[in-house]
Length: 318
Image: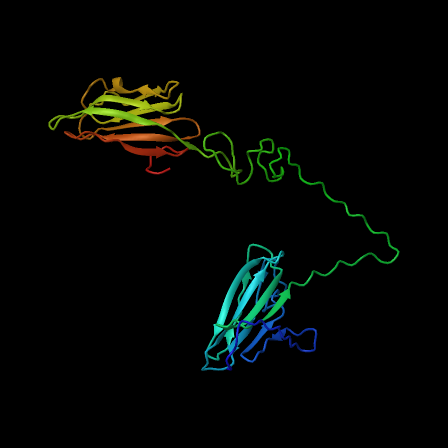
């Protein structure tokens, strides 16, 4: 290859066969052999038109000769309807070996045209060829003298709350804060994002407690209270084991979301192996569970569990 000077852009030389069906376009230069397909918007296997968001550039590129101080590259760019770049890839050669350009592009926006830029490296002397998507065939008009049949345009779907989503997709067209994709607020009784129902909220607050225990004695409750839950939450306390002062008791939190559980245990020491659970529940909320396992000489530590809406068994994650 002869030495090349500067970064000069050379006009593309389009050498096509005489027939209208020709697809191959030669992009020959003194420094590269290349050809591209002028129909990047059809499937190469079937010849069927590709979808608006797809293209399939095809062709080959090869450096004209080595050794020299240059290589060549083909940059393939998919352009949108406003001329914006949607995607781009590059195929290079510096060994005088044909390199394929074939690649299927499936993008998120309509592809209006595909541009091929054949350049030297590093001097960037280039030739360019661009192919636009063919316009769809025009619909046949009425016969001469015929009266065109008027086209009745359907009325647009109603959008009563003005949130931009019609009643055909909006699950609540009377509330502008409810629409597909909106932020979901768990436990507010609304299907904010139209995903099929209100998402259950987690019960706030928890169980505050203190135990009295020594190295030689079993623990007993010194203090136990539900705090910072929702008002009116149902609190269920169970005690399983020999010598429990009760098996099951229920209480309700006050207007501040609190209720004391201390007196339920009557100041008794609980035997080793006893299990105490406190469930704090409310409608359409994930139940909060605190579990204590009693061991002689060990201060009990509450394990946090939960129960999903509609289920009964506590689990570690909800």
